[in-house]
Image (cartoon, rainbow, N blue to C red; front, side):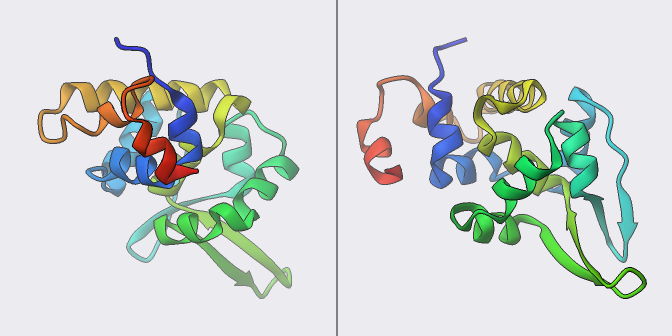
Length: 154
């Protein structure tokens, strides 16, 4: 496998968008389960997990994960991808629910904070290499190949 500049995956939304372009919710759940089992809850037509479950999945402390999810830099991106805030009337608290696609996106954002996230990034990169539908996607993250991408993502 070619040298991959994972810093582009972790720092550039454009690259994350391209890598995740063809992954629907069912594929996201299957990819996550390949690395480590995670139990989703079905609400209406969607599947979600709590922030606490994701912290356990990525072997991170809850406070650090919450800071990343609520960081202004990533908030819109994650909400567009499946992070939902709901209000739990029984506990009078805001509950954060996250779908499979957003959990994959978190793997790309987490950098070196989690070995599970690194495994997911490796799986996504391998998947890109094996797909002929988007051969240029992985070229974006090859080391020292596209300086213009680094400029766009700065």
